[in-house]
Length: 147
Image (cartoon, rainbow, N blue to C red; front, side, top):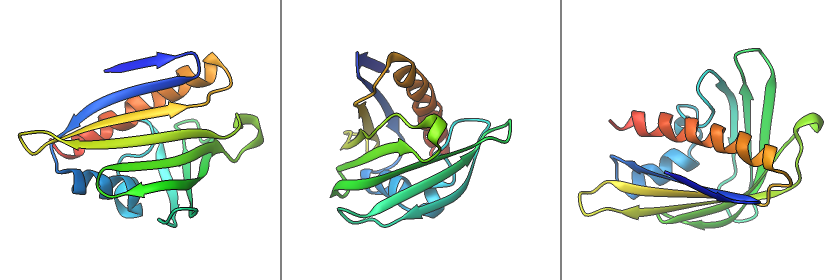
């Protein structure tokens, strides 16, 4: 499910794993490589300094060979419930200014985890739509890891 406003989007998924497992999938490089880029792309390099104020870098290569590098800083780390970090692209042609991603994890009665991803601060509709498609693909990949 997804909803959005003029400058933000919100997506939800239910993952068949505990909040702790999902939190680790979101914060450990060896797990991020398995899902944290859209279908058809590969995550070539992941750097994570998991502390408030620490930085991360995700270097992706799409099917056409183009490189897209997401970079940001962790603002809130509350395992296994919440993660907040900034997001922008390193490559000048993709930059949109700092946006904010919030990931909330809530354990369901059956032991699965509801993931609510909110990405805010888009400068334009085009950026929001593109990121919505990318995040939906990433969340589909994450969901498949635990089915």
